[in-house]
Amino acid sequence: MRQEAASKLIKALQLIPETMSFILYDGFRPLQVQSFLYNDIKNKIRLKFPQWTIEQIEYETLKYVAFPSIENSSPSPHLTGGAIDLTLGDERGYPLDLGTAFDATEEKSATAYFEKHRSENEAAHINRRILFHCMTQAGFQNYEAEWWHYDYGNRAWARKSNKDQCLYGPIIATIEQNELKEYKFR
Ligand SMILES: C[C@@H](N)C(=O)N[C@H](C)C(=O)O
Image (cartoon, rainbow, N blue to C red; front, side, top):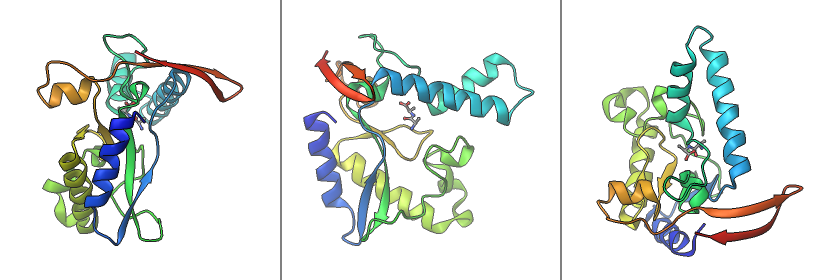
């Protein structure tokens, strides 16, 4: 992650109850990884809804994964180093119940789902609130379709925080044989 975004994450970690921990999934992603995820999730949605049109499949895909882009004007959030996917763990680092699996492409993944369906899963309702309040208090913005996705400094963050400008553009990384060879900030 970018340095300031990482500092904000440490701040959020200091706000969660002592009996909890953070489990980090994805921070910065190079374009190849974003492209892989985009195609993978699109295929899964195609298999789940074989009767859907291409437009419906693309619409649903874009709910759960950003279009892979290194354009200065519209980089995918994870390509900026300002996005983080995470969940809460217990004190030994075992994941707590947040209501769905990470990356589940379903209605229940929406952060506020349990606000209206509290009785379905009281623990997930409380855990999502804890994650949300600690992350937003530290300066992150949540992506409403995914309880695990938070942004700092990128375009999504700037838009939701009413800032005129974002802090981070894309990070252009060269990957060879699954290793990061070189990167530059934009
Ligand atoms: C794929 C999922 N973990 C994710 O990161 N989704 C958001 C929308 C993204 O791709 O930026």
